[in-house]
Length: 509
Ligand SMILES: Cc1cc2nc3c(=O)[nH]c(=O)nc-3n(C[C@H](O)[C@H](O)[C@H](O)COP(=O)(O)OP(=O)(O)OC[C@H]3O[C@@H](n4cnc5c(N)ncnc54)[C@H](O)[C@@H]3O)c2cc1C
Ligand code: SF4
Image (cartoon, rainbow, N blue to C red; front, side):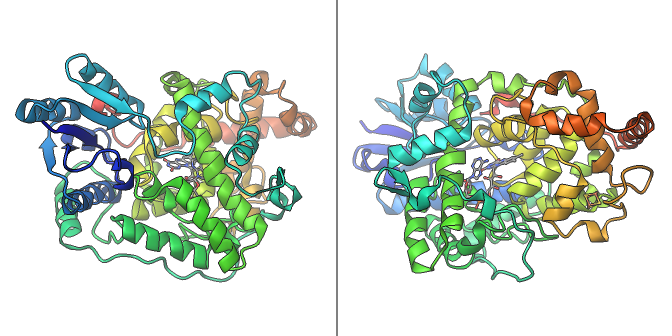
């Protein structure tokens, strides 16, 4: 009797099934209604995932696998129904990437012959990350990254970092360039994708639109997308990695997260190809190293941290922020902060913005205005096409809002308007004045920033990396401090309330 291999939306790789040949393996794939309905997901995100699954089913069938592709109310009932129908000797699955699915499979393992295989979609298995993390005094990404460079022998020369430095970020902080980059290789939807778009467009309670969906949904198209990035954007990745430009959701970034997180690409192949492409296209080391660090460093580290500290990561709320997410995050039209409005509009249109909009606008604003970090995390999870809990949760609660109290970041990533002004072209067209510190025309980031520092003095004053800012704050006069408090309270009181009462269905898998 054949065994079964459960393939979830994030496991879309034929190569990883090499030890499970078609002659002895039946594939089980499940579209779970409960999962789709767990949050008001972006329609493009669901279209990407479902269409990629349906295309992968064809690939599996062409490779000779029998596939039981089910549309079910939820994952658990789908797996049980499959077992009743086919009675496999054993059901295999990769270790799920997310906690919710891990719980479902652990529960089912009590009654079904279920075996989890180490997850092959990272360079470092989660168990090895935990072995690395346990003896560390501090769990900083930079320490992990250097260890990974040596462990994997990537960008190393005679035991030393290539170019003599581990990181070239000093050269990587340029404001946005003037020129445009060519469009990536969008893909016209085929019959399968068009059918998915139709279903998703008709589904109520979702966000955005999938009508103009043109992203890769197969491995071959994802490889083309990656190659296009290497040819046209990689060389400029370093210098402009922190820059933001109105309406430009990619700038010099790759969008490869969407394909990596589905399993269509493997992080090792992306890194290896980036190193080859750097020679082919004369990519400077600051860009190559910056890009490799994102995948070899940040992505592996975030994945490891998630499994190291789940499920408690969901509970972190260092600043005890309790406010709901302002309705602007779903409907930004009335938002007068040009940077925030544009960043949300890009997410609503594309299901995507690059890293700096996520960190320095969307999360910075939420943190400065006291939004509950778990509500923000749920928004990211729903809204971004590359979002899965394993990656958005540590990014939102760790890196972006310091809700984990410094487990991940050495200080909160907060800023006033001057950082946004320096790194973007937003402020010139904003109704607020980035140079004004007080009053109704002042940039809200300016007074919110100082009010945040004052409000959380007891929690942050002991952090040596915050000392300079507290010295600046303490030099402000009492009148200035009173104005900061007043403007900040008035602004926060004027924020729109939560758009709709939603809560994530964490048991959906
Ligand atoms: C608040 C917040 C939420 C985020 N949510 C997600 C998410 O849901 N899914 C997700 O994949 N990334 C998330 N990130 C990380 C990062 O912003 C995205 O991976 C990146 O913007 C994806 O775009 P890209 O593929 O163009 O990345 P590039 O800038 O081209 O980088 C290349 C790759 O590096 C990896 N990478 C870079 N930074 C990170 C990081 N901090 N964590 C994990 N991987 C990283 C990604 O796989 C990415 O594809 C989040 C970051 C923040 C600050
Ligand atoms: S002035 Fe302030 S609110 Fe307006 S775009 Fe600049 S940083 Fe954003």
